[in-house]
Image (cartoon, rainbow, N blue to C red; front, side, top):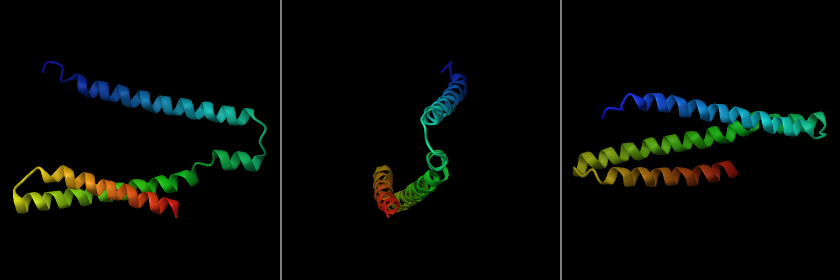
Length: 108
């Protein structure tokens, strides 16, 4: 392909656009919140990102672990049976189980 050099360029442009868009909308949200009349305690609760990160990190950790477990199990099944078709199915099942577990962990 003559345009293989474009892949990293487009990837960096898209990543930059996503980051800039995220920062723009976050600042707009904070401007709207500050425009309303809230007390200092309410502003601290609204703008505190620490409470949101804990749940997201737990979910990402469970998903990453379940993805790795699915890949490991799929590779073991591949080595034992010699069939490559089982790897994606096992990975999808493991990630689905990870999503279910992370939902229940986050609810409790």
